[in-house]
Length: 435
Image (tube, rainbow, N blue to C red; front, top):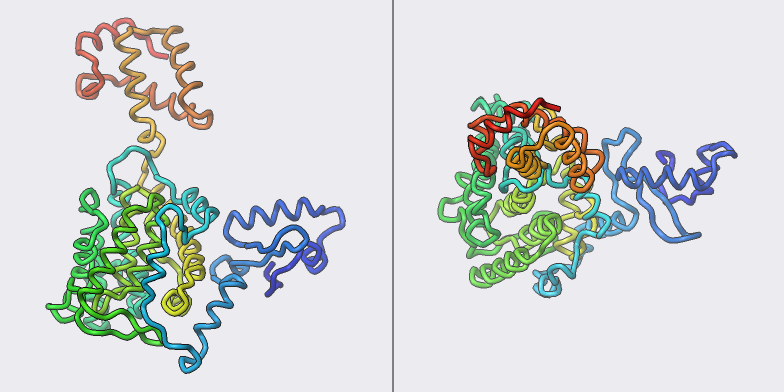
């Protein structure tokens, strides 16, 4: 696909790539579908009009907009004088109906959930984010600040946030920007159980991100003066009361959205678009977009590898044209890359996801085995029947190993909450020979 800069039909791909005659169209389609699932290729059209085009370059490290999205981007990359001035469009927000309107397509939401799905079910909100906190802190702080022009390297960001070492020859403003991200991310993760999507929490995130970078009286406060957007013909809404009312409308709609990815992206779009604060609006939107993800123990969105020009252009497409698809493509592409980073990190931390996932079922099974005094073949038969009915085949071997370990190490300190008395445990241990 790397030799094509336009959507290509299967017949053209086969011819230009010199594929063997014995490679059927069906095989080509299957391989293209695999590339689509990996996010490396996209398709457009149907039946005889179906065409394919690359999303990533040959090293899988770059980003290009789809043909349709590039057309939108080209519109807002024209000279400013050629673009009509536009103001805040309240009808755009009004038209959005939670759980009926979707900015992210069904395919995008499914891909996001498949790659960033809850690491483990039924755990308190924020468990995953706390596990990977330092990695999240560095990655999100670095990328969010980078998108604002901060020149700290990733290595220097880590030294600053974890060791307090300031990089040489860096502006004080850049250092403060990163330290503010640290405080805001800590507030988000530590307080996620009480972190409702509301105006107060959005204002708190802004206060923490903006403290020391703008006038003290403006940090966390809805602005009273007008603002303008660099490189854009968009003129944001003015008037503190109108901005407050509109921000309330945004968080009210966001709270109703059930899908956490749609909720996250909705916040990213509309907090950025409203520009409710004198400055630091985009940073506030990026952290607010993580509230639903952290709460549901999903991989956070860290805006990895996004080029500043692409991000700004996609945002301005929202501002001037109310077109969200370029930003949605960037969001999905970057999120899938984030998933790879955090997956590696989770493995390095030794998080036993299956053990935690089946904790409740395992404890219930142990309680039954002990209280019913099951031994030997009766115990094994009951376990096997339980596995068939309650545990997917791919997880059964691991579940059984964890169960055996727990049964072999049962003691007074680890039976709390199981409904097992010490007497029952002692009696069961006398008759149990292991399995």
